[in-house]
Length: 106
Image 1 (cartoon, rainbow, N blue to C red):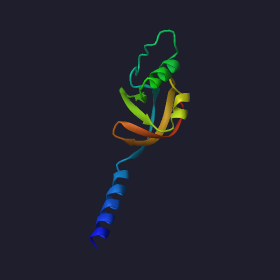
Image 2 (image 1 turned 60 degrees about the vertical axis):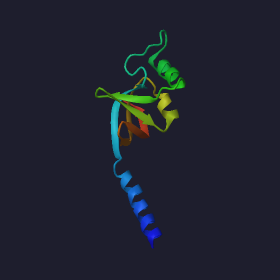
Image 3 (image 1 turned 180 degrees about the vertical axis):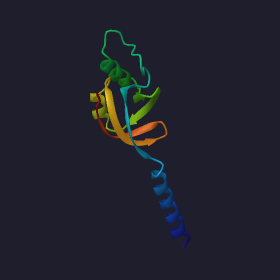
Image 4 (image 1 turned 45 degrees about the horizontal axis):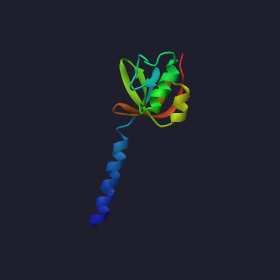
């Protein structure tokens, strides 16, 4: 009986955590968490600088409304749009967005 109660309580807790995630769409510039708005690699495009920083351990972020939101998941799609203005949709938890879709924005 105790095992059933513990199992049910654990499952209820796990499902309640997903309620804290919210489907969100953000529009901003896709960059990395080291350079954010000002890219520092001379002679390279913003996209090349972002990709180089990612190779050295930085994380993809979208800068919108003066804040940087980390992008998780779909890294291949995200990489294609590095340095560009994007519209990204996903589950927002704290300061991280798990990407469900991303496309170039105007």
